[in-house]
Length: 427
Image (tube, rainbow, N blue to C red; front, top):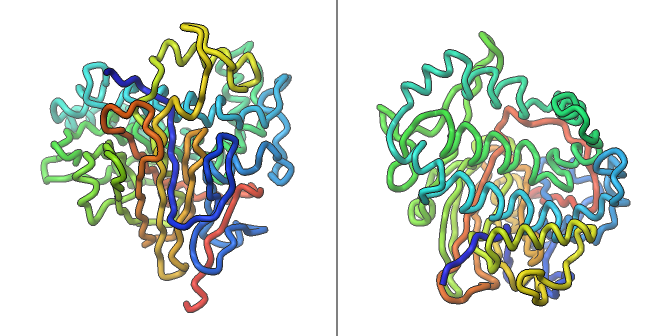
């Protein structure tokens, strides 16, 4: 039986967790798990160790009163409330841009199928020499590209995004700064923002499998250059000015990623889970940065055309669940329509107590964004909570994106969706 591409679920599981039931009845834990930590802080930014997850955002239950700055509207004249965009059928859900129906899924540009551009761009041959020639003419890895000072990685430009979109698309509705602000690190929609998996540092950007570096991938997913494995590239921030070093974004096999002892925070891995096994991947942050982790289940019950019809129904209902499917007519049940993976992220560093961060919503795309200090050791463990097909191993894509030390802005977002990791008082 054919599996169809599905929406994204990143759920994170922690042993012996305490929590509450979400709207679909799944037990969720919205805290970090370790001795003596309540999981909540009045001011998470007072510590260099903070995090937010899909679970903590959904744990607000649509109450945005604690979020600073206030979120009042998504775009000027929007008839819907901002809370509607946190519903499972909206942008953070399985049908959203970080779900498998979107560009991170098997129907997107990254993969081994004949429709995936990465199969021809980076799996076919080494074109790095030609790539560097295009850089001299200010190509994707030049100062005018997405990694340059005029691109989305310049925090000084983030507040200008709504007006720039309006200028480039005359006649469209002006976006509200409220939504754009909350796409920044620590925001409600941070996973959709510039330092997340959809940004230029992720699998869709110039550093990844469809990128402009031109390196060819080996069977494990390493980028190969003339001197062996390549892990970084250098790009001018401004023409004739500062040169910045960026980590390349690899697409590893499950076996290769699980065995790596020196993995960084810029990679993805495609894996499968059978029964009650646990897949684990370790990686280390070389910098003070934010690390965003998303787990994308590859398959779901509905084919793409039917899924988009379901999404259209939900949009007309203010992103509430549709009661029935139109073709063929049948009751719609959200959580049983997707593979649901649970994942826990363990964080270790001499400056903090060992901690485990959990996101296990069951109804939206699960993700974690955590601020770490250089030398932090992270371990992502993936387990299967629900298999919507039960006829073949459930497969997923784990995407890890580090913001790098170059994108380390001062963030002023506060809210009950943020948590902080405790300092080790013995140090």
